[in-house]
Picture 1 (cartoon, rainbow, N blue to C red):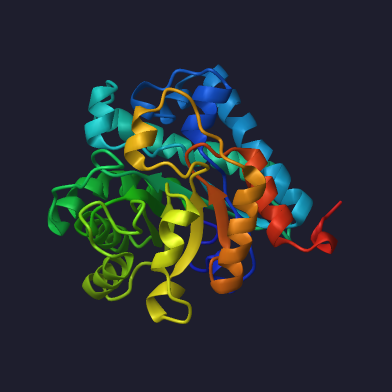
Picture 2: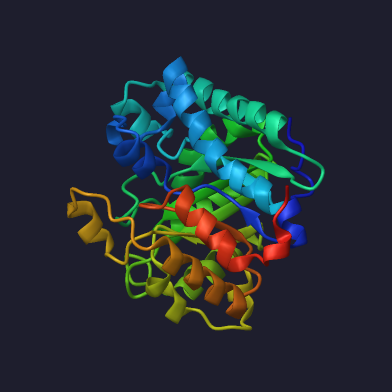
Length: 318
């Protein structure tokens, strides 16, 4: 059921949490095999669904203790046609598992949500290709490519969709147009290199303003994910209109570059407390950044540290 599709509560203000680095947590901390970094395959088995349930519940528990709302993203970052084909999923199987991912999250929401803790269900979209490389599609091709996954989320009753780890302005534009065509709210999350720019060198400002210009501002908001705060904080200017469009941060635990992370055989978990302090600094400078979570290398410890840094002690709930 699309409970919040017409009125997303995270747009009204206040901090909302989300999860951390799902794939890195499941692989490095839980010892699971995720072919092609695809977590959605876990939905196909009872054991896999239990691992996902435990993963999400760790974060939902943090939100409960702090009395915060939650944006619950589906484990479907790889559930698109190209990656699905590599994993043996045809178009019908992909639709089925994207629909099932939303129904799975609805069960979690039903057990957790309370009047003071709204839980928004978001269908997670990943890039067509590698999250660290530039895509080659134009906007029209990207719109057609991502339409099937967005349609499945809309049919299943997702409140919104969010596209993560995007490196291409054209791909982001196409996703926003596809979501608009299916009448479902959409958020776009770009990833940047250590210089705060997209992989082709476009400034983050250019990316956001171009997408907004090409879609008449149809994107609900933007996020930054899969980069450490030291990589992008220098690219932001307080008070500028384009920065106010950035409502969420899901940072990496590590200060390493994408290339270094790709070559690493061990997980760099960074320093959760330091990451929490960096989120606090971002919140002080950019208070519109109110959707807080993590990406590669982060787990529930990092999100807990972010809460402890950003929330006053009296905000803790029973």
